[in-house]
Image (cartoon, rainbow, N blue to C red; front, side):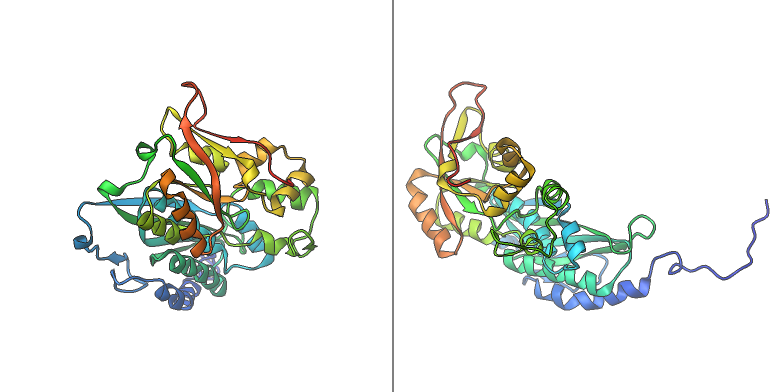
Length: 359
């Protein structure tokens, strides 16, 4: 077989990968990444690996914790609106708030951005949000990777993921084994949908209800797009403050699966958390999705956070102190329920009772 070689020379750029654009993107994002740091970071952005000096004298028996996550189809809203400077906050929240559930202090995070085509300003905007999220969480943005995937992704498409690493003392790891009957469940309010349930939310609001992203929604007091892009609340420092001030048994980060399923993950067999819907009213966005899509309550509660982004299980003696700490930190918080002995071996580990007011 003869292979023809006539014609113009082929280049990597002609195939869709622009190395120069990638280098330009790195230079644009560098100032943001350098703001999200900690004293333990060695070197700067651009090396083959990120270096972090773990100061072992701070811990007697340190345990490293790690978590990896993304932001799901919320990215579709950012792409449709061409607004990319908040989605990175969502990415950090999904990672660091999983870490703090076991009591770990997040140390650093590394991101991965896959794009159809590198647009330096867009990549820089995404990383600006990631850096802001890291600053809110108190961790360093240690580096990452931007990969160009022409032919696999469209020019305007991108996807995000990140891995975070944290540390906790071995004897301070939080979890189910610390929970006792009589403990109290405290809710921390969400800022909205956070980063879960967007496939259902988009289907209902955009496809069924046909509400334009630019359309003003009276219940929200802003456009639908602004509501859907509201960044995920980052609870990391708030949870660490609770650990320092109160007797926290465990936390549950309310993400995919909803409140009941995520709380059940951190409760031991034989105990049940009885939660009262009457203690809060979900934000209007949840009611709108339920009404416009005729989505039943059980489906809403296993898909969305319904207004509760994080829960803490604390000793009954520390409830008032815990609520005071969260209030001082401007986190909406309330008593959600209590932990009791299960009525039988097959009883659910968490259950919601009653009705939401005005929902």
